[in-house]
Image 1 (spheres, rainbow, N blue to C red):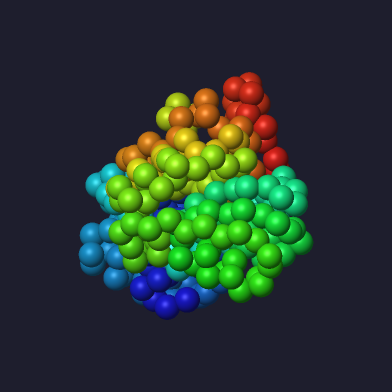
Image 2 (image 1 turned 90 degrees about the vertical axis):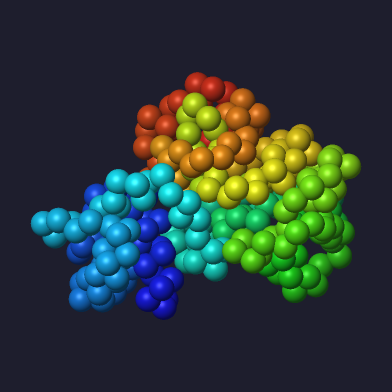
Length: 257
């Protein structure tokens, strides 16, 4: 991982975990303490973080800033958990299903496992996902919305994209999230989140793929209220209080392992 990519990933990690020992960051990113300290020096100079007694924390206003990462960076974070979650998600599908796949980094990991299925109808707004689906060389029907291309997420957004999804009805939506809040539901840093809302209205079942670090995070924009969600797939590190709260709200919870 390049220094700039790692520095962005460090900000994302600190937003999820709060104050963190420097040694813990070095372990998480599989690098040396010296390398991490160089990254933190850059971030501190840019007033992104504050270092104190061997630990680091986001500066006060950083928690409220738009720190959305490019999709290429997001893919590298918690990759092992994302792959397990994605594999569990594909088990909910059967031959002939119709589905929407959003442009998130976790749902992107579903694509290799889709090779086991046939005759799927798949719609997405993600350039990465449509290219990966084509590479499978399967006899599936692939649909791609138009719209305004957003390079940070490598996906299409805007009125044209939203109106396209409004014309369809699918069996299932597989969607990721920047934050999962027990009051607000799915939230995101992405200011052009209207297409994600349109996806939630175009599917009979909404299946959320979110690693445990996403729970308890509240991003500025609401994508989907809790009452619309049917299933949540996450990892074994999910706090029991979130697991119990989801069950009590009638949401199926699948722990990927």
